[in-house]
Image (cartoon, rainbow over all chains, first blue to last red):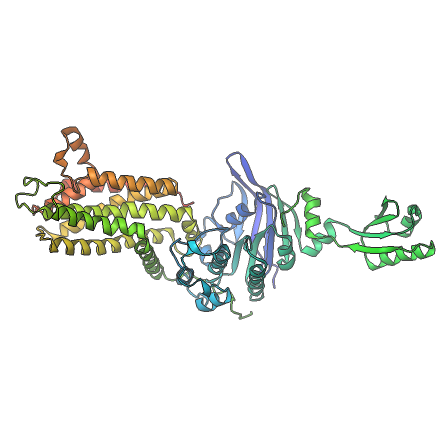
Length: 308
Length: 261
């Protein structure tokens, strides 16, 4: 899988009236990967993705999708991308299979519609028109419409919002299959777990800017330190403990007899702590290592909580 | 390269195939919608049958050209109404809600070019009108209608009327909220039905109002159709000109002000 950039955003600015929705945003999407654009509501995720799709013209900065200007080269770009809007996009009087078959007809080499209907469990929609489908069925139809034309690059705007856990897993499976078959996927989400499960790259967006970008592992390692906790006799000599630990490690006793070590918590550090305890006749109880999650990273970067 | 189910193989279908598919879908959506059928089929048919057989609005012999058959007066008006109901009211409401529900937006990201979408919408309107004209003509003939004049003149007037009403309908759908379009399009339908020479002859109105009403597209269409079908005129150029001016203004304004989202 190459590292060729299929979406390249540089210094993107987009304003609506007085409100700046996107404020100098940079983003790269590598070919063949899944990139999650993660952020709370109103962070600028949809505006960013819709600019990449060609719906909006940047007020400043440049956007290239598959090497094309999404507005000026729209006619060349549109057949190559698949788009799932956050909501709607279907005639209220159309049936699910009817709409999907129609989208297939607009493409030269569409997927087998019946197989796709089967794959996404849309067969049960029968003759029901779009307006009477459940929210989950509407979401799955929108997803099917995004992939039916066999695009190189798929944009999914909150593909699992409002889905029950089972339907969410089914959507995740499809995203993994797309990636395995060489389709590049860009999705927005405010579910941490979704980004951690699916994404090769995560861009954390806050207030119209990228607060951090990298793999989930890089972000969890780099953005926040991990914590080791244990309990023991109150009043241990933390100065002596710190001498045994690498530079950059901190130790505290927030409550008497409760100890917290923060730093790069690796097996070596754990061994050092337990050795020091043994030397000082301390039985460390309830040792726990807290691995930081994207959620912690996000809170640390933005001071805000994500809805999860 | 992998060759899985989803391996990329992008490409647009040939534009002719896209337009055919889009036209078929748009026509199905129009014909499936119950409220639309009320406007496009049931109301014109009912008006034709009711007013031809029951003396509710007595059509004076002078306006029926002396023949005395109410259906000869009503049939051209109802054909004009059919064009109004599909090209203007139906199209405005359908397009307004497509805009509201993101259908136009979603199609905007598909390989279908905008001009092809508008072509398909126009073709769907024309297909619906052909069905309406066939039904209403059959009904009118059964009621004793004896049309005159050149079918070509009738066709030209119907096409010009369609262009004029489409422009105005799309202008409304592309600028107002969907609910406002729904209300306004129905209101305009009702007002034009009464004040546009469809069932009430325009000479029932006092003079300053009458001259103004004659400039409406519905009046130009119903009057022009009546000139040909009832009086056997060759081509009512005055009415055709009025329709052409409305078409240019309406389509021009729609092209300029239409908002896709």
